[in-house]
Length: 96
Image (cartoon, rainbow, N blue to C red):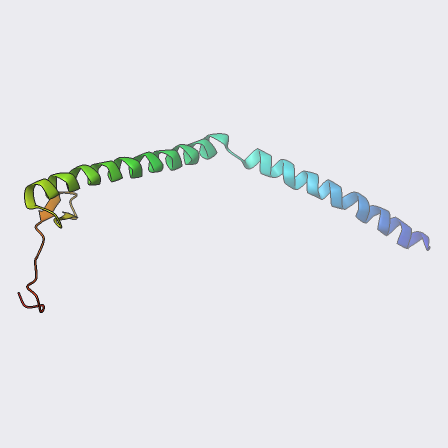
């Protein structure tokens, strides 16, 4: 093996791990644990909010069914208000 090729090969074998370690250290320096925790907290809160919304919808659906009978629909306005729509019964043959 030529001396030049041997030196280049050794340099490449040294540079690759050093570059890897430098990039990993740079990433660790830039990583903000508070931001990661904030994202995790937001995700956990989103799950709790979805569960609460489902419980609220089930509660309002029971009220709608009690007030307007079976088949009543629960609707929400764009402002978040709850609206109950009574069931529409269609006569046999599809005519109202």
